[in-house]
Image (cartoon, rainbow, N blue to C red; front, top):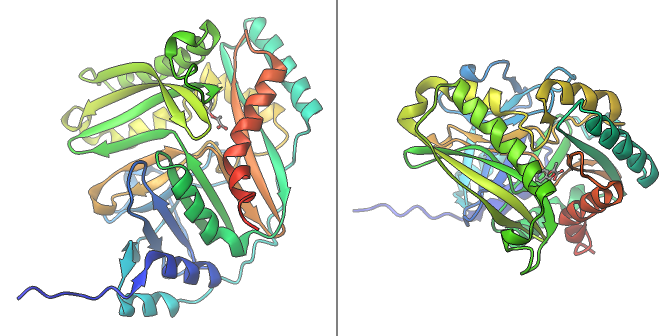
Length: 376
Ligand SMILES: C=C(O[C@@H]1C=C(C(=O)O)C=C[C@H]1O)C(=O)O
């Protein structure tokens, strides 16, 4: 006779415990899916990942910074408990019995905020450098600080993000006393059946029926996206991956925004053991860094007021259910005591107009700010 195990608790009950006890955990909802998964580590000792080939077979939730030479490390939250949607009483009790972390986020210094005028100056300098021929594209970003005590609201925020952005990768994680939460539209490398896919995503407009028609997008936006496509194709070529399908560019909705997107689908047998190297080479794509990549990275590090930390890095479950689901960490915020730090950016090319680029980051910030306004 089939045994029916009664699942007495929902994944959100376990999330509440994980938040209250300041456990080391990640919760996520994949794009287009209903399931919500929670990965909880028994202790607070984070596993540092220096090389992606070293990830244990049972996997975990991977979190990589934008720039691994800037202090932040790549970590794996170990899957000591993996809960999908619901859990039984014993598992719930085991999670409740875990020891809380002593860290409360007070030890984190908030990243520096950039004002409108400072950003306009930086944008104009960058446009000048690009027009001077030093770069093809540079992706700039800034931080917006939003005051308020949001730790008690994180369960609600995650819930609303899932409902509002069904096509985003929605996540919330806690490591070392602070949390990050986001709803990103950008896959970095994901498995699906016997295939892997990645995308080139760049070019942004507010959502409207008119903008949904790619014929209405201009040369600047198409070029901005084309640089990312070239970067991805170059990485595939360097990995000797020839058999792949490319489809796009097409317009893809992300909440109140639209982006240009091209999909690359690769048969798994074409990739073999190259997955770790592919991930390490794809990141950072020209969607978040620039072209040429290394020079743009130096430019970003010398000009931006803040460290990007995990913004524009990548994250997601690896090895859980034998799947790989890594996404670029965008439309995200770092949750600190008494304040939130929202990270927003956009690609700059020779034809960029500074005020328009600022406006683009304002709309991107609204992805999360509009959710915060729903929390009273
Ligand atoms: C950098 C961000 O987004 C990236 C930049 C885009 C652009 O420049 O048009 C579009 C999507 C993302 O690849 C961000 O959201 O902060």
